[in-house]
Amino acid sequence: MSNLSADVAVVGLGPAGRAIAHRCAAAGMDVLALDPHPSRTWTPTYSAWADELPSWLSESAIASTARRPAVWTDRHRVIDRTYCVLDTHALQASLALDLVRVHAGTAVDVTGTRVTTVDGTVVTARHVVDARGTLDSRDLAQQTAYGIVVERERAEPILEGSDAWFMDWRTDNGVRPGDVPSFLYAVALDDHRVLLEETCLVGRPALHLDVLRTRLHHRLARRDLVPTGTEDIERVRFSVEPPPRSRLHTPRSGPVLFGSRSNLMHPATGYSVAASLASADHLVDGLRTGKPGSRRALHTWTVQKLRNLGLRTALSLEPEMVPQFFASFFSLPVELQRSYLSGHDDAMGTMTAMLRMFPTLPVSARLAIARTVVHAPRRG
Image 1 (cartoon, rainbow, N blue to C red):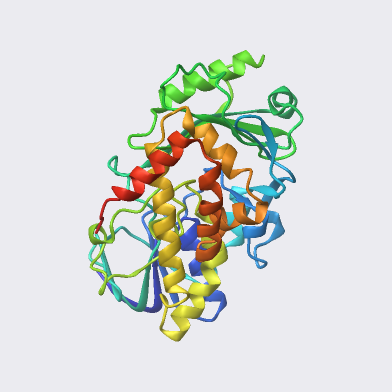
Image 2: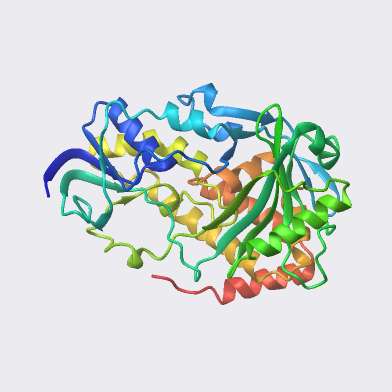
């Protein structure tokens, strides 16, 4: 048992926690980071829109780019926005912790100024940042995915000339009418390998990985690619919404939430890494001035409420409406797509995107959205 102190204590060393610890230390702050396995090598595939990434991030952290990724909704569409797959190992290495004191331990009590670990270590700090990620709770909406990694030449027929498939909603994956839909996500990991992944965007509960595996193999077989069984596999399951704040901490005494544990997680897509990287310096400025939660707080709160409405809409749509919903979304000007997908404090852009979409949707989808608004749940 020991007592430690620091300017900033960061709990959790995933991408968000490591980014804020790295940037705080670079700004000259005394930082102590806690994680049960601080040296663990990251393995998930992280992706981002290129214009989301901060200027300070090393170019070595980008493994591949798709200048104009494609979607298939009601037809083939091209997104005029560059999409990146990050080099996970290079990203982790670039967020160096040389200037950070790192403690291996599991936090059992976290407040705004104090962290207690399972071994009795107590850390006091002017500010505590909780970046431990989402909770694995099946009563929260989750995203699931099952993918395989294949050689580039084997994947070329699947890509059909596109730089990448951001979403391919075609039903050659063996789904029947009324089944929960899933889509193909296909991106180059580097010059030689491509990830082919069947994804359940959001569900409560989400589709089981065995179902996604069957659908992926069915889809690939229909496109003349039969897995050998020796390919590397990626399995994904995580909550796309943070739990109610009351289940994490008492708001007044709680720590600063960051990363996917905060409103930086996009509940309609599951993306949070790029938003965390881009927001790190803003949080650093707030920690230095003693006002970590003040930056455009009303705008951020409004965007979170609008995004949660989008999540509830996605959960309420009948299966056949989902591709139509995304057909409307990807018909929007790319600036509005960017506002909704990436503008975590762009309340006006997010609202404009949603209002522009609404009249373009089928009547059944508009009715589903109206019911969602009327019956919006209150969560603590």
